Length: 168
View: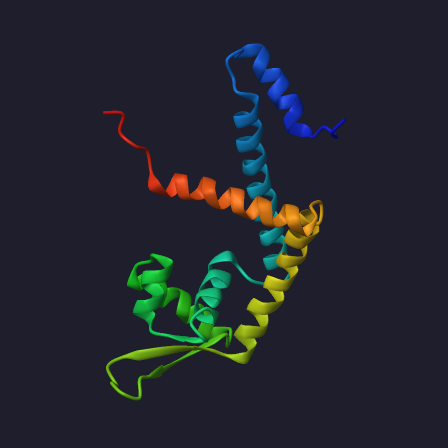
């Protein structure tokens, strides 16, 4: 017999109230939601442990993903922020010595934002702390099962990204 989790009781309780409830769909969606919440709490704990706020982490991650250099407008587009919000973020990160801004060598009207070694270290240490919890929970599956789960979630996400189809 498979070990029961907290969602099994949830599904049992709601099937008494809604007999037409699909237990597989309800169980799957509820478990995904609870896992997202769990990972969100783990991320917030990792960030707190490393003295970072979520918006700082996301900005440092965006810079890291661009090789440590980007223009503010590239960061605005990636993070879907207003230019003024990005300026405020960069001001704070610069005060903490996590980034530095400099005039572009090709066009002095443009600014380049560069990740400093301190910014890279802060982002990397928080990422590693967060990653430990992700790996811990996925160790419940063997490597083949982890690959299967990734493939199944990809198919579900692709369907979600396609959006609802009209019934006409």
